[in-house]
Length: 429
Ligand code: 4AD
Ligand code: MG
Image 1 (cartoon, protein in one colour):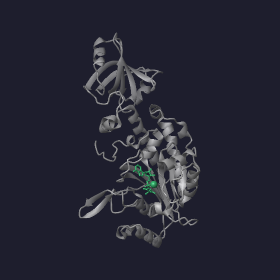
Image 2 (cartoon, helix red, strand yellow):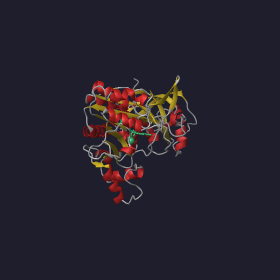
Image 3 (cartoon, protein in one colour):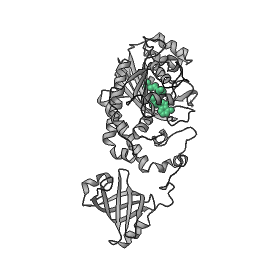
Image 4 (cartoon, protein in one colour):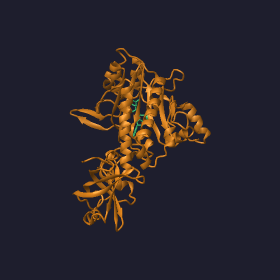
């Protein structure tokens, strides 16, 4: 019977076969312990010399990442983190690997990234991808269960919602095109057709910043809701993030354990989240001794981290100055220097996880902002049409998938949260 490692509990006491790879091996003159992995899990295989000398010799000669079919009897074992192990009775080698570059010793990040196609197999990287997968699944569950429809926005676009400095240009036959920075503008059009929608796709930013939070290509989840004001949108955001945290905690226990993630921080992610204004955040920073920042400046990571450290939950910073935010954000009627927007800042230094806002719904105001921002009106004619034919108040936001994965996994750098990260100066593999 061919099974997968995660099915082992159902086969206790039975002889089964698993297709797997050798992660690591240790042993003595009498026993060989094979750490096996098959993608669904990890399990130890035990080979006893006294039972079968030939088999023992085969096991002893195996190198890291050799692929094989291993047959044996499943036993419960308290000591293994998985709870089960296999008493091996046969090994059929599929391909004998030799000289696998990623050995159990420490390697530097550049070496590991050069070998990303192999590094993905390691216990920790496997755990991070499992958490990413859980967030992807929970995102679909959350929005579908709450009446949203998924709308796919184009990747080749003629617009630049998040500013013109970080665009990837390409030719679109005779026209100029950009790789999408955000699906938002298209999500707004779709919200006018379907009410509540979300996009979930790759987005691109030619950011020259080499930080642990920036990728050149990242995936973004962008809900957009007709008839929702800014506060209504904040409620969706906190419920969504709480839902993600709850599901990662419930379904990724072994992964969080493999990563050594302190889960007490994740258990605190419960709505509602505190809200402070940009102006209050500036005052708070001044109190904490940050004299370099003035009203009107954007926050850098040290500022965001300091603000986050004043709360034990993620915190919304609302109403940023208009001048440092995108053109489509509604003016705050209580202080027209600011806009109806929020950034959700994660604890523990993970920084901005979500950016969102209420959108300008007035035609003339939006047109003026497009012109003021130096954008080409022709490319936004369709977007302005949304304010001409049944314009309604609407709001939305974008969550960066990789930043959320880094936060929940507790890994320090977003480069470990994408299967094949695109970084400044890295397009390989
Ligand atoms: O704040 P941003 O730029 O907002 C937008 O793109 C809006 N159009 C979203 C919307 O309202 N529909 O990006 C949103 C989120 C950030 O909070 C961050 O989590 C992530 O996307 N993000 C990045 N993640 C990794 N690498 C980068 N270079 C990122 N830039 C933004
Ligand atoms: Mg932002």
